[in-house]
Image (tube, rainbow, N blue to C red):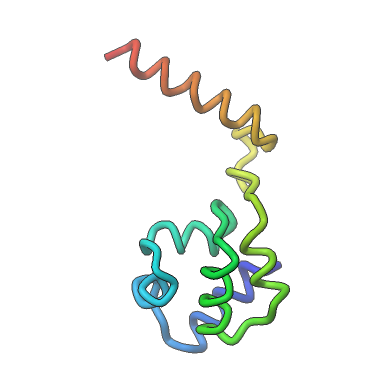
Amino acid sequence: MYKAQILEAKKRKGLDWQKIAAQVGRSPVFVTSACLGQNSLSAEEATKLCALLDLGPEVAQALQTPPMKAIDSPDVPKDPLIYRFTKSLWFMERRSKS
């Protein structure tokens, strides 16, 4: 999977998320989440990231794919529509309690 390739290249090059984000032109939090599969990058951003880390076009393509939020968590729905619905319900519940 591309996450392992990115993390390996990041370590090999001795880069941190702040340096990678500065080259890509996005915030460190967003770039980190995209690299870990929770967000996606534009074609230009993915190309910059892959050039910096010496990764192939298949990784750039994967970084542009819409994410499946919380795919590593068994408690969060995997379908994007159900995920957003659940998230909105959770948000409304928190607002009603305050």
